[in-house]
Every structure is written in C-alpha cells, then in structure tokens.
Image (cartoon, rainbow, N blue to C red; front, side, top):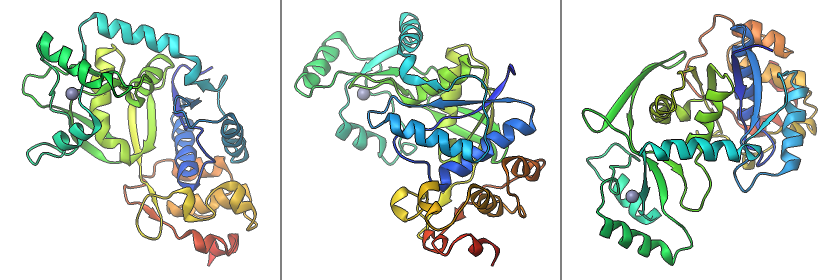
Length: 316
Ligand SMILES: [Zn+2]
C-alpha cells in the first residue's frame, strides 16, 4: 500500500450526481498523477445515510473505473476513536460549551461588522452563573450545549493563509468552530480533519465551496499535531440558473442518465469536456489529460434537459 493518499469522501445520502462524480474523478486523477494511493471514506454520520446508497455510490465509482486501496472507511465505525481524540482536546482545556440557539447564532453571525458566518466567541469566557443559565436555557429544548474549539490568536480574529493548487493564495478567518453538535454528533470539520490526518491523506481534492472553511480545518490540524495536506479546491457544477447542481435538477445520476443511453465512458467524456479535455473515455485517459493542467476555478454550468438528448449532445 502507498503511504500517502488522496481520497474521496461522499455522504451516502443519495446517488452521486454529475457534480459529485466529477469531483470523485478529479480526486482520483490528482492522486494517481502525484503517485499517491487513493482512499474512499463514507461520511455516514449524517442520519440520512443509507446502506443502499453506499452500495450504489461504490458501484458508480467502480463503473467509472476508479480504484482504491484497502477497505472503504466508514465514519460510523470510528466513533470510539473520535471520542478519544475529542477527550484529549477537552483535557487540554481547548473546548468550551456554547449555549447559543440557532436563532441567536443567525443574529450574531450576520452582524454587519463580522465576516459572514463567523462566530465571535460569545460563550467563550462565561462565568459559572452564566454557564448555569445557559444550560437551563437549553434544558427544555432536548439539545445540550455544542462544544467549540477555543481558538487562540495574537490578534483576534485569527486568520490563516494557505496556497491552494487551483485557487492560489487564500486567507480566511478562523473562528471557534463546533467540534460536537448540541444534539450529540461530532461535526463534519472534526471527523473529516481527524480522519484525513490519521489515514495518511496528504492531498485533499474537493469542491471549492469548502475553501472558506479550510483555514479553520488547518487550525484544528495544528491542535491535533497533524500535518497540512495539499489542497486542491475544484470548481463546482451549477445548473442552468447558476445554482449548485442538485438531484432535483433532472437526469443527473448515472442510473438516470443510463435511461437516455449514457454509458460510463460517455459520462467520463462529458466530464472531461467540461474541463476542456478532448475525447477522454476512461479514468486513465481523464488522468492523462489532467496532468499538468490547471482546471481553473470557473464553475461548469449545465442544463440537465440537454442531457436527455443522449450522449451525441456532447459532440455537437
Ligand atoms: Zn455560543
């Protein structure tokens, strides 16, 4: 097995659509082109996760010709490990309880002088009485407090800079991110950073909608004494209205497209052409076409209606 990896980490909450498939293919191709192994991780802590979607997603990735090393990693099998890492952070005094309700957070994080969506540390330094009051406030809601990471910076708010392989230099705010939600589950940021760190992932390829949360994830990596992977934030796929592609937009999954005569090779060609490649018909050809290219950060706009015309539409 390789010692360093790229990865694709879907949530098994539905079939993969063209946007997911394009990111998966890119993640695989970047890993291959850099001599890395490739891992698949099912981010199945979401309560909407279903075993049948694990099966259908893996089948689609196989049909595209993607290969991966070892067993598929399931986050739902790793809760004990997350608990231990979480306890370790807690024992170092790095976590604190946040009693803010959803509505309070919406008001706080949209305040005009704050960077959009960032948490200003409202609950960071409360007195014992204030904590008691916070717990009492939540008591009737069926939720406990969320647990946040205490971010220490010389000049609050802290900013961290990174260099992304596609997007270039990016500097973003690091606020006190939630590691465990008030209703119990660990947050996406926590488990995804932890898993990447302990499984040898040294390259993270994913949609560029996640670029703004990357500085927070880097801060958490540093708290966990993990090294920073290479980041490759790839452009998004949008529907005809310029909104992020979703399953309701039409025939956008492999199963749905098969009904309009699309084969796996046709779909690879479609995804390749969306990135300016010529006629690539296999994952290998896709990776070869990607080598040395910068795919840019411009989104791919697609009208799923046109796909109903069948694969001939790509070559018109
Ligand atoms: Zn709070």
